[in-house]
Image (cartoon, rainbow, N blue to C red):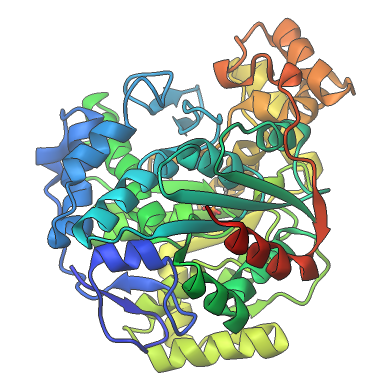
Length: 493
Ligand SMILES: *Cc1c(COP(=O)(O)O)cnc(C)c1O
């Protein structure tokens, strides 16, 4: 497998190089140059998660000699996940939820970030690179902790995380601020996630940063969902869910299903799309947003317009106006027209808007449905799901559940639909508690209260979080990110 840039420059490179680089030199994202990967579902069904994972990762990563079996085994085990298998399907009376939050940070980012460091280590090994690596990551809350947890104390690696200081939940913030490890650096920034993400992208592009990195023999990389080492591991659970539905006799082999995904940077849902390209029978991807509904408008109109007020919501991991991974979908829907994609991205950078042509719009709408949930919708859904179905969901999952109900009403489609549950309810305990019991309490108090009220056991990753010692409390302006990174590069070892 080779990878090429969505913007067409730089030729094709192998998976090891794409893993290490994270982002292409022309600012584009790496996409598979070959799209003839096809999996045989029958061969994946009944396999343990880890073994199925290795089979699925194989065509994407192994061509350079990366040992995907070793990576899968190092990732999907009891050290990193509280359950075996690491994911679960839960059926309520009216819905099917795919629980992706049984890892160390109680959010779905663990599914990919548990394996990414191993893929990177393998990439460095096969390329015989001895240099230090500095991983720069912007986070809307969940990637940060998951990446910190994954890379902490890994030899030869530094991990630097930037999060919006006022844009994450109390638990998310405490999680990141209390991260242990000699190689971890965590900063709050004054601004929102898009500010953090743009600043980090700017740092990657900065001549000074590149020069300093070269001088100190450090390579820069990213743990964001633009890295192929995040994207393809996220396809695994789509296959797993499908196999489980067959095993549970909810569908017959070959029958189509829908996936409804609470979406921010478009990474999770895009992974599902890649699974469908590789043969997974999918009818529709239902893209659920919150009030930052730029994707809803895009899917419905074909026009992407980020010029709107950024809203801070109770589903902060979806508070994003520039969904980076959408660029990859545009590339595939335009039949690999890199010049066209580069032009759209240029328009986005210059004016904050672009509009796709009719054929792309048609292709988009035939595979994707977009809608969004407001704060009241989310709270109502959490309340209803707990009261009527005795099942506890978080704010992001509730946004998806709400959009799924609207989809059903609007289309009458009765295709079995899997709703991806991206975080555990306790991670957003204050808002979940308020939705269920109408009770407002301090964020950490809410954890205990929620357990009292619902009698659903607290996620093990969130116990004692309140007592965790604060180790990183620095907050900076977005303009300070580049000098900060340069300083870290200079400090070196
Ligand atoms: C990151 C995240 C999302 C959004 O996922 P994308 O891949 O960015 O679209 C949704 N829910 C939760 C809980 C998350 O952490």
